[in-house]
Amino acid sequence: MLYTLKLLSLVVLGTIAGAWIKKAEAKKEADWSKLFFWTGKVQTVAVVFLIFVLGLEIGADPQVFESLGTIGIAALVITAAGMSGGVLLMHLLRRALKFDREGVKTDD
Amino acid sequence: MTKAIVLAVVAGMVLGRFCAADVAALGWIVENSGTLITAGLCLLLFFVGLDMGKDGTVFSDIKKAGLWILLFPFAGMAGTLLFAAAVSILLPYSLKEVVAIAAGFGWYSLAPILLAEYSPIISAVCFLANVMRELLAILLIPLVAKRLGYIESVALAGAAAMDTCLPITVKYTHERIAVYSVCSGVITSLAVPVIVPFLISL
Image (cartoon, rainbow over all chains, first blue to last red; front, side):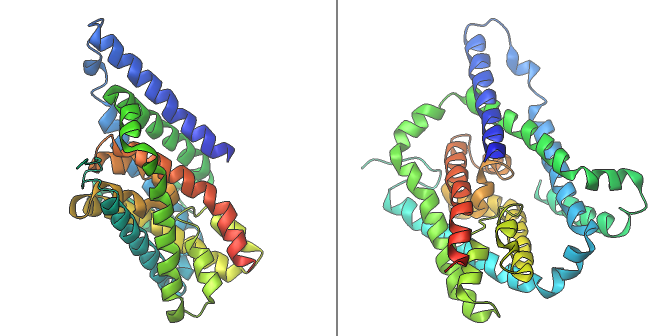
């Protein structure tokens, strides 16, 4: 819970910083977009690194790695079913609430 | 991006299996993986916020979407539990065990701990199922976003919609979807420590 709050507070901090940059740009105090061209690349590298560490964790734990085959299939069946169900119900709700494919509410 | 992610996971698993014990740098990463993952997430989430702030339409998007936005995670959770219940007849575990495993909603560091006392095997299945959920979500988000819709791609991630999967969702949809993703992830995450112990106690 505390961990969740910590992570969320970073999103909020980022949002405040982003809004502040937008304001500064609007006032033409500085061309901030030139200063932040690298954020996309940093994000990509960070995602790939995080996934690599997750893989490393699974591989380095012999118990987890060896169990991948035996209980892995059961786990996969549960996960595949659960994800399909979640997507399906979310899809039905989106159509019932009249949101378009890009998540914009369409008023009729 | 997807190719890089698949490569990263496979490379990580192979290196972890065969080299982590011998290569000091890899051993260090495994030992400190918790800290590294937290640090990486913090960096990513700050940038996600930065993009949202620069986009500047977050609050008007919530206003426009209205309170409906809060219904989506409940649809996602209900769908997951229903379909997991349906496949339990195929598996050597009881209905409540299968549904409790699915109720981890991808939070593989918490859900298996909640089930550890009940049964080590169920806990292990729970760990694998929820690791798979996060990995599959990362792989399928671009596909579902393109073929079905942006909001549906949020359902894949479950609890991870607000952290690990958030940058990927935003990358393949729109900054606007970050609001759905965070709301969905927060509500789903809050549900995990409530639903999992409840289901297994039945």
